[in-house]
Length: 441
Ligand code: URA
Image 1 (spheres, rainbow, N blue to C red):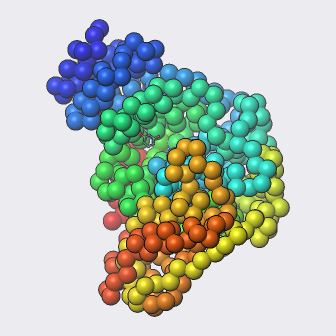
Image 2: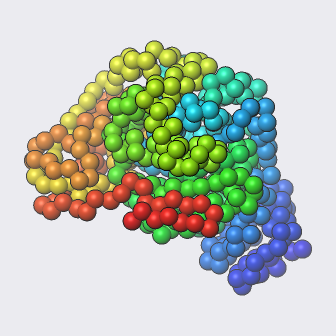
Image 3: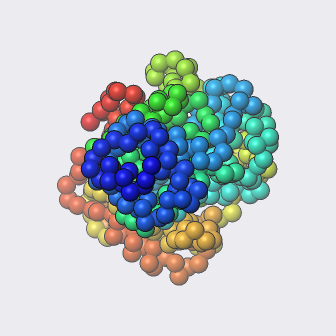
């Protein structure tokens, strides 16, 4: 087999066989296929796409390029959740405890934030003492005892994806639906859960900016999951405004705790209940409406909050800040952003809101940036609200006062205020199972 012939075959729009795909991935990881040939292949995929079968085979090959985590040491059904990332997305900290409170196990590896998007591991580390790195035995023990554990990626998971992603990043081939699907699903398959719920974000703060593209990506990932024997479903959720009111690591933990106490903002609560209900559905806990009731009860009874506290304790974190979120260290400075005119907020450029938070110290500009856990933004108003000129629309938090000027300018630029109110967009646009798309718009 020659890489040259396989590049030409894909360039001519033909489907590759299983042997050919495995040859490419194995050859690339072993260093037998050079970057310039792999780049040409990725560009051919970018333009010609891949069939569901090709995508599933490539995902399997990428997943098997490193460790495949065996979660059989954890009793019960294991459900994973993946979000394509956004601003204010603290859902894992809410839905994993809900699922655990309902008897489903969540053994999850999460990532760190980069650029305008946050990462769950950074939020967890905003809890003093919290450890996110464990041996496999310790990880399993935490899940068996508390129902859940969220840790950083450990071991040698999908080395092929790391190499491919770095190449895609410099060859303008990141935004290809089959390549994104392979990248995300290979990590999910390697992580070992029985069921996978995908939260595909759509809108100005998301990777996928349009609904159609988001649905295509979700369909592709659901097909891969199901072809690999994992129960898989996806929700397409809104990221055209930040999720909830708080952006920034400690601020998001505080909001997650409030939501588990039943006092969360409406949008965050609705999205989390739907995600949690779908996790329970995948685990066979009933139909969606029965699962929704179980999720609501887990909050009402306080059980989900207890599960979060149990996980924090088991992972070495200070539970006193969860029991009383006033104990979180506060930012040294705060600054009120005022509405520049009277009218309705008709749009929030969500990526720009995330960048404003990053500029305050809450996010990473580069992989090596140091985070300020107390920094971020609390939104007082969001899309759809009517505001008077001079009313406070958000409060910025930082440890250095001089960070406010540029962050405020970025935030103000992100918020559009007009005379007429805009049409209200739903929070959940669609739900996808294998061969089935339910649209809510
Ligand atoms: N997230 C991933 O893990 N991979 C992609 O290709 C895009 C987003």
